[in-house]
Image (cartoon, rainbow, N blue to C red; front, top):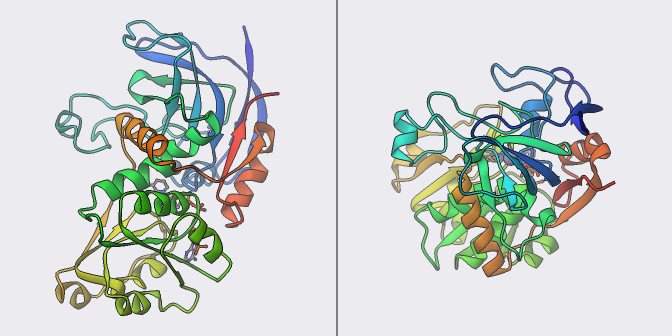
Length: 340
Ligand SMILES: NC(=O)c1ccc[n+]([C@@H]2O[C@H](COP(=O)([O-])OP(=O)(O)OC[C@H]3O[C@@H](n4cnc5c(N)ncnc54)[C@H](OP(=O)(O)O)[C@@H]3O)[C@@H](O)[C@H]2O)c1
Ligand SMILES: [Zn+2]
């Protein structure tokens, strides 16, 4: 039996450990992918820390994988060995429930399949995934760039393109990390007046380099007021991991403005009803996207010149990369590569 390397989490809150495993065999409707690169997303902490309900261990995290189709399981049509593919958070669905049949929502109500949670993810030489999880990678996009586009990219691209903002509107990207640094580029390329908001002055030069028209330092807790002085935002896309910090942005919404939440926070977000009623403002959430949304994201990125800023590390250094991300020191996405 051929062997492969994987960086797995042995138990909730445990350290990522290097293990040797059998290369898995794809079942009916599944595909074996040789992984070349995998980004480290903040949502991998749901696997590593064991926050996802019903998660079982050991588990290999990773939902920003890019590689090549190695073997097709029975009944897989439309894909061939050698196809370049990406695998994101969306790992397929039942195909029968309300949500699946409407095709409008990413999450299946019945048996949501999530890469790196429901099945082993991309911190490994090989991954077996349902065929629905596969997205074609365009020739212009490298594996190292495709990885982060499979979650950080699709989540921000897809939320922004469905946000209701139109060209010329003021759109704010709150938090300039893995998601935020891509969101700034997408917002600029979509034609929005783009405001980047992050804590401290050190990210200003980077945010401007990514194309942000305006930068606001949120360290004083008054970014919302500063935004209001600029006329208020149509959309504030918040990517941060703090509910309290998200709430600070609400005064920055303009008339009919929307606080669009993609960041997952464990603390509550205090919102005054009065702050929303005046000006008909709203608060909404957004979940990543399906594999076809990922393809759209990669095509748009190739077309518009959107590129992740990456720090590349070999697979074995996954724990170091994860710690870098969790301590907010990654600039901006750590990507693991599998080449020896
Ligand atoms: N909705 C979805 O489908 C989806 C998809 C992917 C990820 N996510 C979630 O999105 C979030 C961001 O992911 P990521 O990979 O971009 O993470 P990341 O690279 O670690 O960036 C985290 C961001 O959170 C901000 N932050 C951290 N602690 C904060 C605090 N106490 N107060 C204010 N801001 C704080 C940082 O802001 P500064 O720039 O100010 O330092 C940083 O920009 C995570 O919660 C992740 O789970 C959701
Ligand atoms: Zn993610």
